[in-house]
Image 1 (cartoon, rainbow over the protein chains, first blue to last red):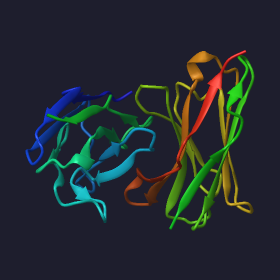
Image 2 (cartoon, helix red, strand yellow; image 1 turned 45 degrees about the vertical axis):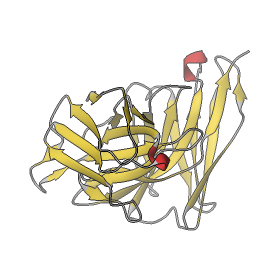
Image 3 (cartoon, helix red, strand yellow; image 1 turned 120 degrees about the vertical axis):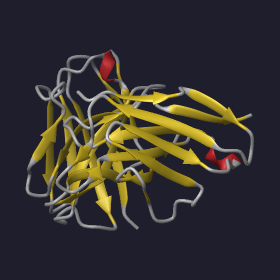
Image 4 (cartoon, rainbow over the protein chains, first blue to last red; image 1 turned 90 degrees about the vertical axis):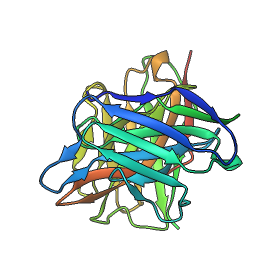
Length: 113
Length: 124
């Protein structure tokens, strides 16, 4: 299975400051035929299902605030929250959907400092 | 607005079969643009894909669970179902159903809509 490793496991950021979460895959998830990275980011708040934020590594889902952005290619990816808001407190997961079984990172918990 | 709702027993005895159904509303399960999947999350832990199904019945299963999993679809009821046999305490989890996008060029991709989840506890 493809292992998705996120770092850090948790981070505390002041309101209005930048939060950066990294995700590394054990194999490249870039498909050369369409030049797409098969990588998504999800946000999960307590007692709720995950919510899709970013897909194809950098495409923001409609309705997701512009402060969320995704970057990276191949095996190394980043989710950035440019200005942390109170409602962003959650666990964030990356997921690869290139190889079966599709696999998720272990999650990164974001809190307010 | 698309909605997915899991239903089924919240308590299953060890060695028995866990059965859940996901009812889709606000959209057709027969759409050619989507697969329909099951994902689980043990309490306080991460997410694991169980498997997915297309309206035609084509399936993907996680190899680690394949020998115990059956996913089926009922287009007349706009539902798809999960059966997981020979369960143990390790199968205790919140089970989510979700939709993922599909097209011929890109294949099966991200999960864009999720149900609220159903907690299934395996215990005697």
